Amino acid sequence: MSDRRPRSLRWLWQCLLWGGYTALSAAMTAAFMGHSSGGYFISIMLGLGLLVSSEALRWLVLHRGWLSRSLFALLWRMAVAIGILAALIQVVVIVSLNLGLTQGWLQLTGSDFTVWALLAYWFNTMMPLWLWAAGWLSLQAIRRSRQSELLRLRAEAERSQLEFAALRARLNPHFVFNGLNNLRALINEDTERARQMVTQLSNTLRHALGHSTAEMVTLAEELAVVQDYLAIEAVHFEQRLRVEEQIEAEALTALLPPMSLQLLVENAIKHGIALQPQGGTLQIQGGLIDGRLWLAVRNPGRLDRSG
Image (tube, rainbow, N blue to C red):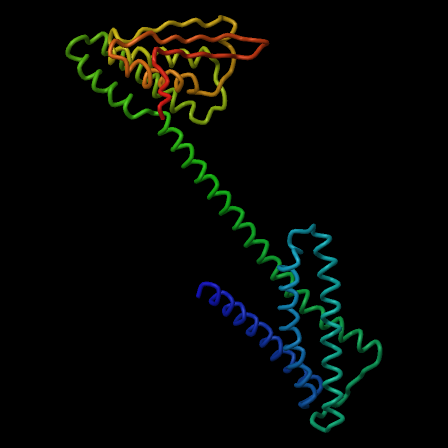
């Protein structure tokens, strides 16, 4: 139903357009040539020919990929097609008119079929086709512009959804939940430490939010967030979490994707420290080799090879 409705609507507009042209042509013929069956026949045949030709032009443009070509290539193809279609219309009109006149079916007065008259008829047939083509191509340009804008908006919406999904993945819900629970416990026990934890938690969340679209950050910036993150986790794990950092000073200005080191640290705690009853030491190492950054995060966990 969705395909039939636009098609039937298009045919309705086409019939109304060329029907109106036929009626206007017949009225002008009657005004200048008098009432004659031949004159009305010419107007009707021209209207039908223009209707069929406009549909043929539409098919050529859409199915031959003319809209994807340059403006010059489109125009000269349209000129050739319109010229040929107008000539075919004139041939059909003249042949059928002569047949009707010779058989006595039609009467026509003042007909002139000289070379110059035929050229004038041909030109007059091309003009409505050119006007139709200009209007139709303008509508196509507007439609393609709207479709491009719609595709752009959809792409932006999909990108926003992906960014939101990535942001949700970065904000570990268990970390936030544990951090808030520990913060609630510290408020009554150690207000100064609770105040520090609020700052550390806000720094961690601000980093995740602020760098959700950033491409690269320095290692120093990433380490600052990791240290805040580890300070929050230390409240949860207490003495079970010990941290050792061995970072070369010249590596601090090196660039890396945001949250990349923190994800390594999170996994090291989740799959190492958290699984050990006695906890363990988390080692963070980094430096430069031939100008390239290297990082290592070690935990006391063991790789389960049974799976």
